[in-house]
Image (cartoon, rainbow, N blue to C red; front, side, top):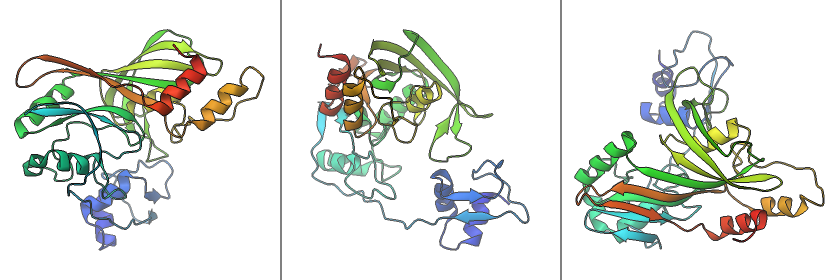
Length: 307
């Protein structure tokens, strides 16, 4: 029997979809260390399955008067500069206070869009602790067209980041597969036997004693792609707890000020700075840039000097 089906049968409180969510979030363990914990895994006799069942909080799709930074808006779409710490859409654990709740207050017509009611108009996502640009559609037609362009890589997406270590190459392209990490379900890995292609182009902007300031251009847009690629190259993003971006460094007079600056960064130093696309209605080329938020700008100034 498939693991998701087995869980929904063994635990009446879990629907099959809810069981799949527990699997994807790392709340299921098997006694076989070689097993790939995924919904399609085939459960055998004498397999021990441990589930940490999470209480479900009903996500709220209601409008909330939350301030958001709208860089552009017309009748078809809007471009938002998301603050670090804001979850993009309601989900278990984050039932309200999200970007979608704020957008429903700002654009009430989003509530009329068909599809997932917790993500109306949402074309793509960025992580909670990543700041920067997102495009949101106001109609199903615009959303379909923008999602098609994301799928065919016809969208310009450029991030700035500060990673640990001095990267040797000035420019490099990282191309791997992308899939769930075999030992930690909350992470992703390029070192998997099966998965989708993930490609990140990296350019070094500056180097300090302990870190590199880099620009990352996405050719594909997988979950945690930049964080995963940099970590597996030995250069995790500063402040990225999940992927090893918080480390102890040997103190020397040369590095002591940098270490203090790194410790003050309370999140991953990753910012979705540039977003470019052709307007799906007018055909006009559009390109937006979001200024680096103050916490990350302070880190950059302290590590690399004020430009």
